[in-house]
Length: 469
Image 1 (tube, rainbow, N blue to C red):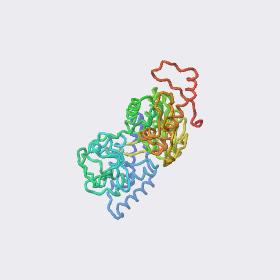
Image 2 (cartoon, rainbow, N blue to C red; image 1 turned 45 degrees about the horizontal axis):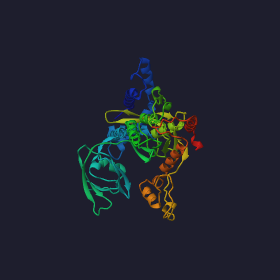
Image 3 (cartoon, one colour; image 1 turned 120 degrees about the vertical axis):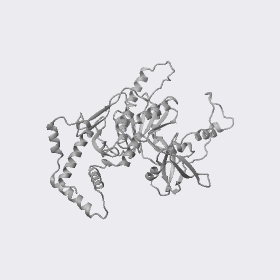
Image 4 (cartoon, helix red, strand yellow; image 1 turned 90 degrees about the vertical axis):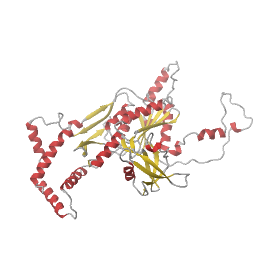
């Protein structure tokens, strides 16, 4: 049985051991004997509280309906301490710690499938590039009916992901239902190391790019550079949509790197906590990957933490127009402190603030332009006929081909209907086009120098406020 004296000694030793990890001493150890005595005094708990703890501990050991060993009870006590602090401080057991490391690095052993739930079944959203799933020919929209012979109906998303992961080289058989196939079929895959890129990009239209940042991992900064380089190879970048919707956050340093990629200078974010080591300031360095192209950042109530740092910093510097709906409002910093090789605690150690000193905690980022996510349906009107459809119509003299209704239909079929697919992206694209109307762009190969009037116009665009749009 643990006596109050034994518990006091145990808690005191644990507190002293954790201090260097928490960064309370810059040297990683206490500097003087006086400091050590003072710290020991502060680490002592009231004896009456320890007696209460010991009594509860003993009552559970003796009277609980099932026997629970002492180690498990102490682990429960640790979890309770952290859960009582705030919603984001927590105890990470072996599985949770491993999952956190996988999410942070973006590497795990599995099949390489992004999945969701549709009609109570696990459905493939997309197979990731160069993964067992892609090599096996799995497609977006495929339904996973069974895994290794066991039905996947009603299985939660977390459980499904857990089942798909496993040791490298281990086999798993998926029973797939595919549209256009009368019967389900089996696909056997071998798990392999999967690298999840947190940033993907595509061109919305000529000159207008789109970057989706799903979360902030250790390599998100490098992933952003990779995605931007691909976009720039497709031509001049006139504007960029940065999609942070449903981004839960992640590594703070990576959010700083993303902001830095679009700023030439200035404060990005600063943090304040009880300890000196928690008071940090992060600033941008010269170099803008977009060459000053207009930016629109999309957020919603699923945008949290590091995602809010990015939106808030670009908003404060008036470098981007923030669109969408209010963000989540998680303005605290969690430090992961290892306890041993496979366990850790996640402890809230600071609050962060935008360059203008705004705290996001429990308030979030408010968009410059509010755009709700809605479903938009095209209205089919009457068949339209233009001059170009009339037999014997006169030419336009512009040296180009006239476009009749059939030509327009074919051109339309080759374009993405963003207004019906994602109305928020469509509105962001419209804002970027509007911003570009203010700037007279000189082709890179042209020897023409911008006039003073053009330079003045560019300066006005650089200083345009979101509320003026």
